[in-house]
Image (cartoon, rainbow, N blue to C red; front, top):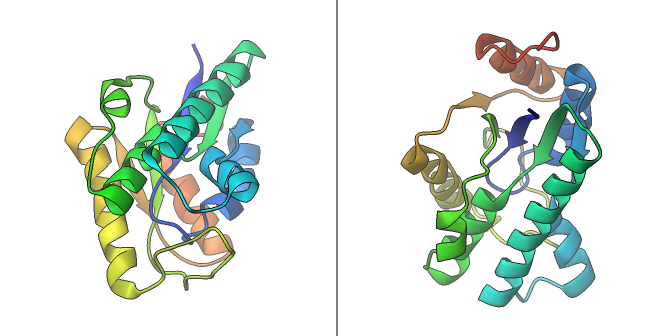
Length: 175
């Protein structure tokens, strides 16, 4: 059985920066943020079909990590964030994501306490849009009753917050 911890939440909250730190802490293999990879290759003018392709990419990357024998996976987002994008961009839910059941064991959600930075793939930079996106993202976890915790702080404090949340939930490095 592979343990899967997922970084989840609105864009520009430090998920990708936190990923290698938490992966090292847990001895995990990182499953990269497929949505970012996709948008860097194809642009950010997304359709629902693009979101379906991103969903498929997430699923395939996670399966590949498991097939390689990873004991612990650190997912830099997963299909639940793709669903949040569907809601934000199109006001709809993708049924295939609602039917998807290979959710992570625990979700770390970095708070909106870092400034938004435009990197060419981000779309929701106003404080109102960021707050709405975070609400949509956390509601994806809540509607499924999934375990999750906030991560706060900047720099090393943010990493320590994530580590403390993992330990509190029983997912420390000795797991």
